Length: 361
Image (cartoon, rainbow, N blue to C red):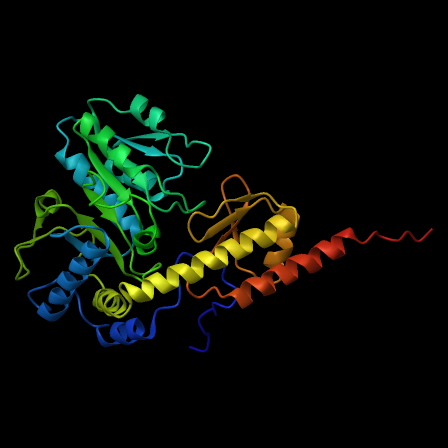
């Protein structure tokens, strides 16, 4: 095979990044292992315990349960599945803000639960009054997002936890992207801050592990019992994961990255990424674009579609929000030089667009 992987030098829209060198090396060593069969692969199973312990430390949970999943989508589906299985009603509903990830729509479709989507406020955060108006005695789960995919916002997690408790529902936090930067902010988002039951937090995003390495955390092991199925031909007696065979590479990579970078390396990474986001936001504002304040390392700006398409044509891997803004995620691989080059291309496009076309007459 001659084709080479895509380089990251113009990737500005991804929430994954180049793995840290230690994470890459660990992934290669554990390529042939399967934590889904812990009796056969006890070494990688023990590593998974280490991974969950480290994720628990990051997410404010002293005695965490969970496993390394394929990513945030799987973790979110499993959280909905736990809540549905624990619900005492046959017609459970799940309440989430419109800013939540589309994986919850997949979960509702697969699991047969009603999905109630509420609006966000002027800061793109879950509207608490709308959440209160939407929950009822059949609500199984209230969802909050700690680092939304479009604007990098953090929902009011403690208040969402209180609303969930008021109707005996569970509370799930999707911190798949934000979980590795939020520890270095003043936001209240994790198990230690609020009545959170489950969380998605992905080492393969800001955690710099190799793909796939997502994370599902649960406040207590009995929550995972809701997912367990018998595994008669394996040495282990049951399995709570969604997939059977899983990548030992992702588990080992996650442990290697977290042991190398938590907490000081991740703190330095957050500072760099946040500074880059603020630099880019300022550069776009100076050029007359309306920019959403980057509370986390993600920038959204109202760049016209024609300009966006021209930047894509120059090779920039960028995306748009649901309402059409340019969206740039300042991941660890995104350097100030990359952003300066991006702004340079934007300036050249603006100059070209402002030059009048001469008539032949």
